[in-house]
Length: 165
Image (cartoon, one colour):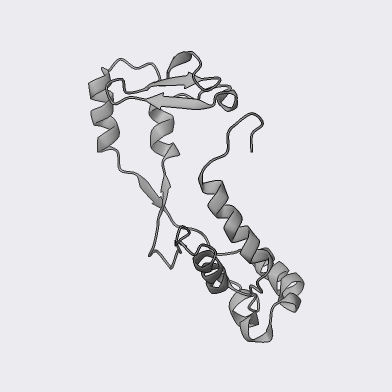
């Protein structure tokens, strides 16, 4: 956590996962999913899995956002941010809770109006990224270094013999 920042509500639920994970034998991704599900009796924690394109998608937002927006230098020193639909591209940031807001214009200078820029952003097609398979070196590492610690019935799932592709 960045020093001086407040704790995020989700951190407590993540702590429940860590607590159960330490006491559980985990040999594959399905076991992690079970740990997440069982970690909260109230059902606060849910596992979202990626299954060959099903589940969630990785979006390349930088390809779009980098064209229109600047980075906020020194972002880590701010603790609160306010974005308003009425002022697109403007962010108000506070160094401390209930402190004074500092306003930043994150839109890169362009000759178009804000309305035209927003229309242009909406027309952009966002690229969906597909995760690449583990390279041969990574497969070899899993096979030689991790496989000995995985129970026999899960070795083929978690650390299969490396394949060339």
